[in-house]
Length: 155
Image 1: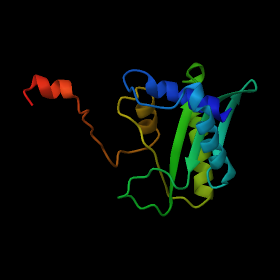
Image 2: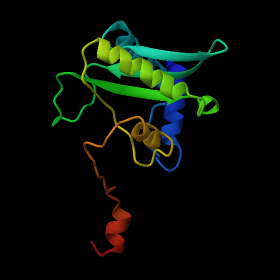
Image 3: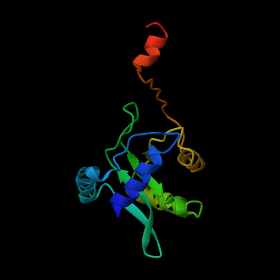
Image 4: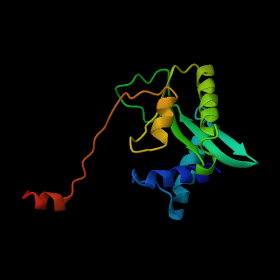
């Protein structure tokens, strides 16, 4: 179930305009199972799942040691690793309910902040996180090094 929701998130990240790599092919399943099994074994990394008619439709997954930017104070911080709602269940309050539940859990565990990464090209994710109180703390830029571009510019 966790693997299927992660795969749904992966396909979302692969979609235009993001084109972000995410391991979604069947040959990646063993690696993903190992990764998620290790996460599930640690009670400090909770996963909250939303169900509709017995089927999982959403997930928030937290890591106590996530990918928080190094300039941030890690003490009192929890990292929101995955937030996904099945496209057919979006706009029905599932994401907000999962986030509210996760934030209540984090407060009860003594966390003061929650960080996450979101791509500005994530047409559904970025507005959701901003609407729910998340604020930018870091921007990153990247340039693809393409030899065809260098050649065209005489470089």
